[in-house]
Image (cartoon, helix red, strand yellow):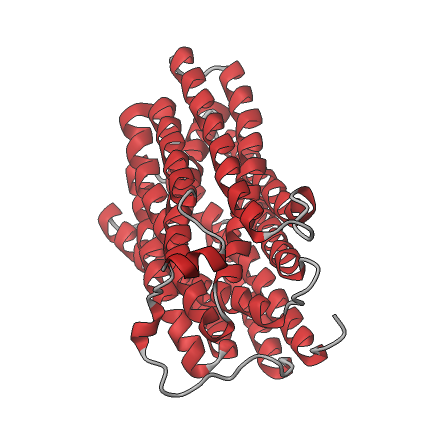
Amino acid sequence: MSARPEGLAAYVAVTAAYWAFMLTDGALRMLVLLHFHTLGFSPVQLAYLFVLYEIAGMVTNLSAGWIAARFGLTSTLYAGLAIQVAALLALARLDPGWAVGLSVAYVMVVQGASGVAKDLAKMSSKSAVKLLAPTEGGGLFRWVAVLTGSKNAVKGLGFLLGAALLATVGFVWAVLGMAAVLAAILVAVLLFMPPGLPRGKKGVPFAEVFSDSANVNWLSAARVALFGARDVWFVVGLPVYFYAVLSDGTEAGDRAAFFTVGSFMAVWIILYGGVQAWAPRLLSAATRPEAELIAAARRWAGALAVVPALLAALALAAGGPAPWLTAALIAGLLVFGAIFAVNSSLHSYLILAFTQEARVTMDVGFYYMANAGGRLLGTVLSGATYQAGGLPLMLGTAAVLVGLSALAAARLRPVGVAAGAG
């Protein structure tokens, strides 16, 4: 698209800042998870560390759309980067000598601030796509897929970076180093952000953050269940299982386990991002009408549910850790990641297709509030199901949640049909 050169420059700047942010976000998650697991935290306690992160994400997304509509998209991006720097510096002040309860509470609060930061930055980037992407030839789907896919590839590198930093320089220096890099990026964005993004409008009522579109609401419900299905195994259960089967309890064994767990999580996220970026071509999005893409969202969710159901059956048959089970989990969850990426890419396109430009920040904020709600649900269930029933219960729960996502996606209608029915 030849028009909007200033807008394109602004989109590139926002995307680059978002990449840097997501690199630190992925690294921080792996640092916190592995560091506190080695300190003896149980799966449920590890889940608690991320609960406030997800709750903060829900609240932030609900309000961030209104904040951006009122004060402009650049303000939410700057705020997200600044809060993340402050959260990293605060985490570096954690004292290993504190009691477990105090440590959990402190990290929960810091992670909550990080959750606010991440979703401010995410909402800014995703809303910019709707406003700046070309409208012809499947341009919206293509730009959404590139942004989301590249973001997840960068976050995957962050998982690997976090594990590598923990094994080499340790927790405190890793956190301080990331804070310094992100602070430098914030300064660069503040100084060199090109024009092109809306500055906001006065008098936007907060009540407008709640959508009256049936499609937006059903898609948000599908998103809750979809991301709950991923995080129920991704956040706590699988990393703890891999650590248990890979580490012999020595310092060298811990380092090897850190690198292996971090590498798997990184490969999973990078694969996920790569398939997301490829999804428009896979789905022939440029030539298919919206009604067919909505139907595809239902079919792909149904296909996804099969994978965790099969893995749960294998884990139940194994009765405990086994080399063949570990290999099956790795292969099966990579397949899950590829199919999950197509589902996620379809959702990310549909939310922007369903919304109008005048409401884009508020509908995107509401949708990503649902996204955070799904991650919160998955985070809580990840520690609880793994501790209560191990891999079979955890993976079975994931299969049920994907099924619920498919049911919600079945209620979506093409925009013209939905408007006529309403």
